[in-house]
Image 1: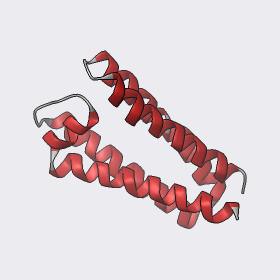
Image 2: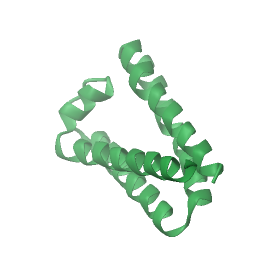
Image 3: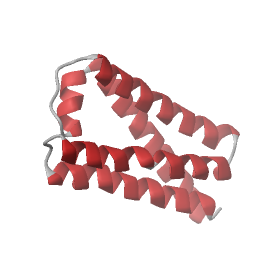
Length: 120
């Protein structure tokens, strides 16, 4: 029973991160506003988009080809991104609701995913 939940959560999170990355590449202003810190399109938004897109694809590849242990370590490490995003939003005038309700909550869900994958 734990296996389908662990894999489904990891796959959904990886797809979500890839979607966020694609959105930053295709709609940078809207994506930046959703991130919590409005910004004009610039190279940094493209960098974030590429980072997130590649992390999502890498997570899916690890699940498909390396197994749950590698995917668990990946999720554990990648949880640093939304934790850092929380601080970035707070330090740059974003709201606490976005910082904690989106970014910190995402970090918690990613850590839960890592724990479930480690349990397999």
